[in-house]
Length: 536
Ligand code: TNX
Image (cartoon, rainbow, N blue to C red):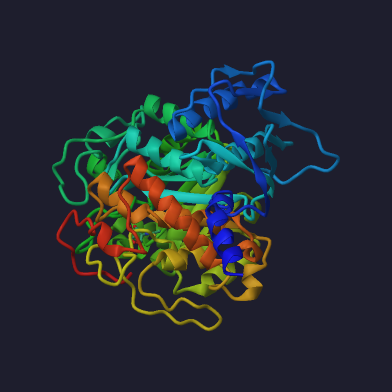
């Protein structure tokens, strides 16, 4: 008996290699055989539009295990990518992968699916033995929105780092990159009609108001959008309004809605027709750069600066004329007008959950629920039939710490709301992994208006790539399973085993990370002396 056990454990690593796919596929069956990856391995495909994917697979195999596959679309392919018509359309992103001693076949009726099959194949390669275990995979995503947001206003990272993040997103089958390009601390998107937005508004960041202007030119943006598109990732720009506008107002003060203590020129002036024209031009130029045809208009935390409106006679005159009872009514009026501009361009309006009050058209709006302490806002969004992306601060804000001993990054006072289980004060990898099933009340969870899940990385405390990686990894791996894998396929124990292997991959790739199994391995990266935590 003892011998049988010993044999089983000896074989275990062999079989478990095949299980190391993150995110967990819908179904995976492993067998004993294996395919030997050799230099002579050829890639084939049945549709010439797959040539790029074959080349991508070739280059990624080289990066993964230094085997050079020489002949894409060779005559005797061992790897085959097949775009196939099924009787019934499969969900976008679904694929089948079968590997045996003779080779690997990836099939799907959509190119996204083939791309994700390729990602799974890359994770199946045993880099030590250069083999692929025999396996049958049937896979499809749980959510169509699998998002990640990066704030480059507070600190700017630039094209090379963002490309690396896009590659990580691709590895984890994430498909929406939400790019927070404007905020109080810097405007990062070139607008040709208003050059000062970047030459002046791009100066400074969260920790250094005099830092040289940093921003993306329109050519940079096109390059990044194309890079992401080849990895089946839509890029969604955010132009935050009417709040978080300090950087823009530094460049064009004539559109400022005034100041209150602590929040200078935080809002745009909603009383001037010129403001609407100005912002519409910005939106038009932005829209032409992002083919996903979705513009995130922000709409968050306007209350921080809105009292300034009451000190401006032009603004109070508009309130009186329209019979608005409070500045908030005017805020809604402003937001609806800007929403109309987006719709007229044929794009969708995306907004933070504050905008649920605004009565934007339900079929053209996607709401991002971020205020975990306000579940009523999620319920309202669902009841108004908005599509909703779940990104509550707990556990989906990666600027929160991930270990009780960490000092830099946010923490939250425990929140307990009936039906919701948001007792955490910071965001562990397990919390991210267990989202959303163990968090939301069942009724909300099963709403078909919930289109997906997203993590947001705000960068007030992030000044270096090293800290960025530390906050991201390994939580991004947990995000992958939260967005892709059905609850019935999730298992914390299995995930932890896979994560240990994944951490080895981070190490090999030269990425800095937090190791939840051995926190001492890498010390916390603290870029700036931690400030007192703000709660809201
Ligand atoms: C709230 S989330 C904000 C951001 C901050 C973040 C820090 C949201 C829509 N607004 O402006 O960076 O908290 O966690």
